[in-house]
Image (cartoon, rainbow, N blue to C red; front, top):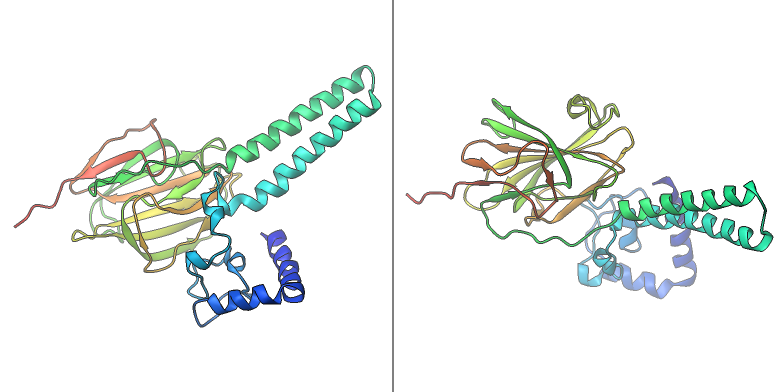
Amino acid sequence: MRLELAWGYLRRLYLWTFRRSYVDRMLRLRKGTANQCPHPVLDPRDLKFYRNRPGYWWDPRDDPFAWRDNLPFARPGLAELLLFAGLLFGMAKLLLYILFAWQPAGWWRVFFGLDIVVLLVLGGLIVWFFRNPKRRIPTDPQVVVAPADGLIDSIQEIDDDAFIGEPAVRISIFLSIFNVHINRVPVSCRVVGLKHRRGRFLDARNPESSTQNEQLAIYLEQAGDVRRRMIVRQITGLIARRIVCWLKLQEELSIGQQLGMIKFGSRTELVLPRRGLELDVQVGQSVQAGSSVLGRYEPKRSS
């Protein structure tokens, strides 16, 4: 993040110096009346780490970088993807050049060969981690979809949740480094609260990570007449220490819409009202964010 913010300073200096017409056009298209960022906002790239603040913004049609949302990779991870994967692949290319140019003999050839393989594998894992595949989103308004890819490792009954206001069920999903890490919205809803809590960085497979690790709780209210309350928690892990969420208060969301990601292995929890819910999953089952149905509610009876 610090590297990207430093790069943003250099990018803005370049734009102010050499591309004033572009800057003037983007400032004319910019919406909002106040800057909530700690730096000048010249184009949508300057909002990357501050999208959930009620400051400046652009319409999607005026965003010259909106095409990045259609890439098969997570837009919040493009910097890591280019920097780290590019560095690893570049080092592998350099060693490959040395191997063929110098043609070392004996164990040196084996050493170079193994290093090239390791670098390519590590670079490939980073590319794999930041993938963002398309998902088929259910249209049934009664269903609740998974907020994350991974393995369901816990389903717990809660006698009474303070936010939901009634008995609830908590579904915990463990994400390994091999899972897609984009989080998605479980139902069509409205954001009514965001609460970040600092904490520890226990292994996400540890049940205590749910209560002790650093996390972001997203409080949602379902759209429609029922207005059920739900909670999505993004929880850090031993390796995953970067929570990304770009939702704003009062923002309207559709089922399966992307809400953020957790970088490099973690846990995501979903807390749902228990009344009228029929679960379709069990502990040990693998799910996919936005497409796997966790359960469904009974349709509202007309009076």
